[in-house]
Length: 475
Ligand code: NAD
Image 1 (spheres, rainbow, N blue to C red):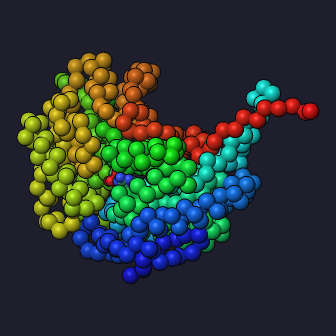
Image 2 (cartoon, helix red, strand yellow; image 1 turned 90 degrees about the vertical axis):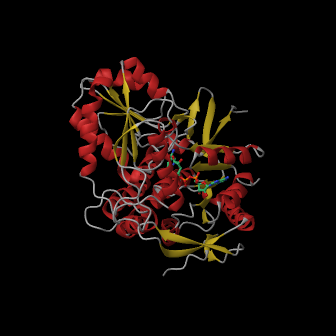
């Protein structure tokens, strides 16, 4: 078993100050796969000091040099793509073929995308008689979740490196192993010491210490809305830049003119990808009332085609959820749906037969879900889909927007203009039309309580830049 008892600080693997460790568990079989060191505020201090002292030189490197480095990272990650995918499959349970493609593939594409953006990004431009310079914001603290662990990490690390920032990463302790591979790669490609630092630990200890640290200029967290609020509060004292990528409860509006077979099948598959543990999952399927019973039949049949099981078993589509607490939480939501009177189309609160070991949850579909029900309002983060009947297009839009969240959404219509019209009325950061896929080059982020700021594309780069206006003329 590889050791995870050190942190990567100032270009070295160093023993932590904090003495605690936690087990990293494979959620498919509940076996311990690693022991992880958990740091404390002193470990954060060391990492921040390293990042601070590296900032001057790193932020002054030519953009072309940083672009070349991003390309080298991309190549080194590509060489380890299957290892990365399998590591993530083991630590959080996504079926291995999907994990190799998505969990490892997206970070590789993200590094490539920022290498490309750097090629023609203008860091200095005239504006009338004033010169505008865009400069790295400084030392960044990154706090990330377990559901697409490396994708979320690289969504911050790649633009921060591109901008010339230095950083400290605190990954989720549930799925941290991929972050060690990233640190190895960054070391191997010759990133200067102190530019990237890795410290593991509890959110309430290491995450809060980073968020409150006076020498950290910016904190970016991807996680639940509750954690985002803690970070924003802790960072406010020192007026940090804070970006938040938080939860969602996204609506998938099926207008009355669609091919329901295609739209419902795709909607169910997308919702249950990664066992429903996707922040932008389309967990509310809004359907014309008169079509609901047809939709229920299609959804039931679709779920029957999905294989539930071990991440490395042939053909698995739905693995476990990440841990016992998440399993209990999701099962609790399913019970609440039943108790509050939603119609159970398929699934249920008990574990799937034959899968009593491991944190498995039955893929569950409810119908007749109304906007005030808990399963329509709260983010469940498990394989649970709510079918919600609507009367008119206006009512569908109002239901879609009736949420504290605003991360993502979708619309289906045979008429593209009609779909766009509805999409424009949705208060969300993304809208997927007619089953369009995730676009790595498009800005990603939330309205309302789904967050502040954007990741990916040049908008994502600019989150890591300060803007300086230089006025003046020849003497
Ligand atoms: P979480 O909020 O429990 O943890 C996320 C990270 O925050 C972890 O590293 C955790 O240790 C840290 N943390 C927790 N409390 C903290 C505190 N008080 N101060 C500082 N850091 C703290 O979330 P999770 O369970 O790991 O991930 C699931 C959540 O993440 C869901 O709500 C999901 O919607 C959200 N998410 C959002 C996006 C997005 O891009 N918007 C992407 C993926 C996941």
